[in-house]
Length: 411
Image 1 (cartoon, one colour):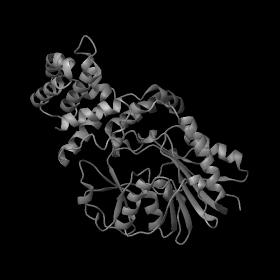
Image 2 (cartoon, helix red, strand yellow):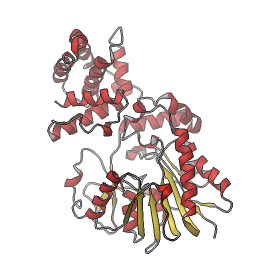
Image 3 (cartoon, helix red, strand yellow):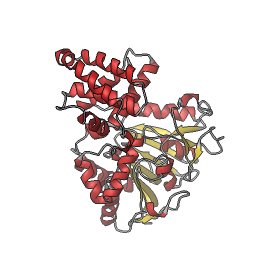
Image 4 (cartoon, helix red, strand yellow):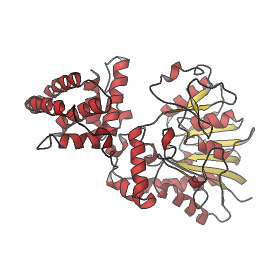
């Protein structure tokens, strides 16, 4: 059942739908089978390039896409996830036979290829899945080929679970305390079963995603807006620091999750469902946190479907929107107020370049260089922002790609 669900997820990704945007794909499967299917689909996408290399060495002609997906599932399940070959091969043959006449005709080939693949030597030495050229080219230009390969290796490793603790919260057993203040857990984890979940002692948030709110340095009683706030990790951080927070987001469904997390963590914030560009506070704010819409290319290690459903189209429009949002955020700040601009993108045009251009548009605007516990000097950029990459902390499990900078409005 799980393999059938995983195949359905992968086929939908090939048609342009993200893994997260398939609520009905696994309907009818028991919860454990849904989790297994989702994991198998994600791992297959994460290791597709390696699986294709194995398959190519065993076939004389590339199979049709539907059959190729079955082969990829089988190769990854055996060679990466360690499933017994006999069970995988038999299930893959049965799965192939459900694919109509072409599948029935290919069942024998699938059986033969996967039997040979089960004994393949050198899986670990195969290079990781390469990013598509629309993204890989600009990133090689920005960071160099060696860094690009390190980023792709980090994507292959996936992402551990990071938690942001409330002030004074008791540590979660077996969690590693990261230098920047987050907690990290590795291996399969049932979040709701962890100590402190019901008490709201922490919330799930990648260590890199936790840094923009820390960079803002919220103070008790400050009036702060979290723009594009959902799903709300940064809102929770600001509220936990004692700020008077207004969380603004255009998505009411995503704001429901924010409300649930605020309630669980016993924190308070004003929530506004609105287009950020249409919203203005009653009085100028002390600070604004803008985690702007972006290409999300920094999150591929946890969203391995992203390279398969994007083609670079629309990034120019996102860059224009980000600039407009920066200008709007500055307009609702009091003189001397501060803005943290952040994007979960690896593309400099959505980070470093945005800040350089904002400084040119706004005379007197200044970047305040980060001085945060746990960050390394090499992460600080020339203009004074913070550039994070998936290959940072490689020995600890990496981090999401992010850019952030704290801007001070002239007094």
